[in-house]
Length: 358
Image 1 (cartoon, rainbow, N blue to C red):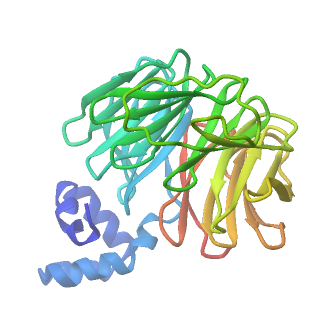
Image 2: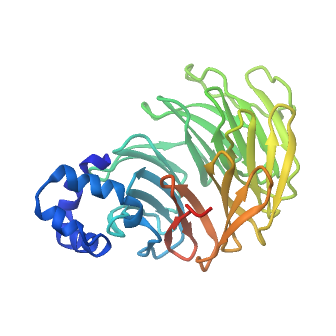
Image 3: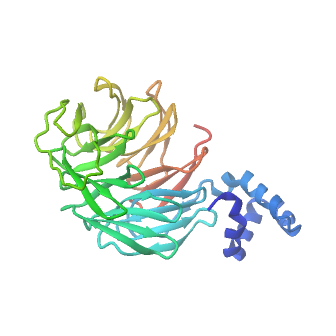
């Protein structure tokens, strides 16, 4: 739903929402009384950051494991209680809860404004219709917890799992079209690098940069014992080594050939993918680094088991700010807009943060 349709959304929660808006923007009551819909919408859009700033969303009874931005004022969260929740940030409430998984929800990916993918500890990937909460399709094939999921193109998604496998799926048919064995331990994270390549991180402490070949042929290929940095017939692979513990999160940086990684060794590393070397190591977290987020071309955010969110300058490698409102591990981060980020935690809360001052 676009911001231009925001008045329609407000009407669904009229009694509660307008009283909240009038409290934040006192002049809005007079503007609304004029029944000038265009002017009302303009004022709302100009002040959207005020309506969303510093909100703490409660309602989860278990860890918030993953977050997904749906639009400018709605987000979706996955939980350890097996559910998926849709949140309206303007009213600060959960407006829909989706059930269907039988284990924790580990990852969420947006297909469009009305459909999402979810990966779970129940070994399944599900495609959901948000309008009616129906599960459109269930993809099965992994033999252990699914940990990460990306949309690769307009036909395919790619998943990673504790079964050490990467699977490429045709989400339209529900078929697994390829399986890759790249790591010797759990796959913990996965990102799309470009139209042909992905990057994976593992409990084996390594990062793999993988060129995925044409996956239109419906077949199942398992490539075992792939030599580092060599062409193994069907795929090109490069291994990045340097972390001393599990690689938990990955982030594509604005530089064409650069990524960042977060690890259980409490560090964040920046990598040059051309030569496979570590450019810089960011140190400051007191415990495992769990999630990474790009704020702009010079700034990233990280969340960790130390309950902290840290904002980093990539040029200097220095920590610009530390956010410390969570009372347990920070498990996920998303960017809401150019002024705000959102975090999810093991303390069962979601917090909307203002980062204009960064």
